[in-house]
Image (cartoon, rainbow, N blue to C red; front, side, top):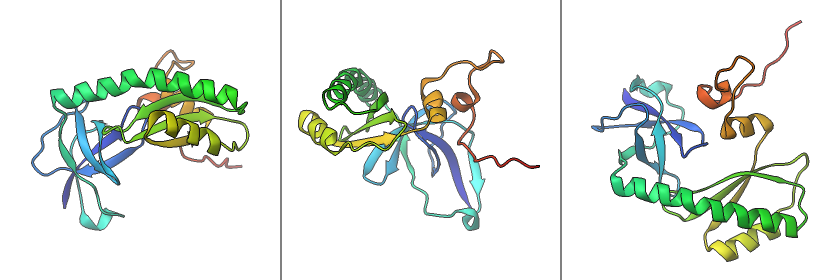
Length: 181
């Protein structure tokens, strides 16, 4: 059995289970977690759960620590840097006349990666754009094409019912719905 906690990586990232040993966290707390290439941050979105080893598909990464004041300063500094990065990316998209709409951007916790989220009706060849941005920012650049529901989740908003959009507030992912006749 493993004690796990659901964590949403960064602001708009996916939700994953992380195992926690002796770290006590509450929903809303920011934590530093292990990722494929180092460490990143996320926000705890659920209460601790116990999962049986047999129910775990792949090895779980762990929560390293609750975010410190210094970690939060770095996270906030990364958020401030995003405005400049987004403006620069938008300018380069226009210069290269690419048919894409920049939605959001984010730095990894350690500032080794800069991710740009965009929408487009068609497939976009953004290889030259990535080279331009890597040259400017001196970090690894990722471009992620997202759908309109993901855009709504990232940007937030209110539904017809007057409540925050379900996709932005509590849904963990989108499932393909098949109509039953």
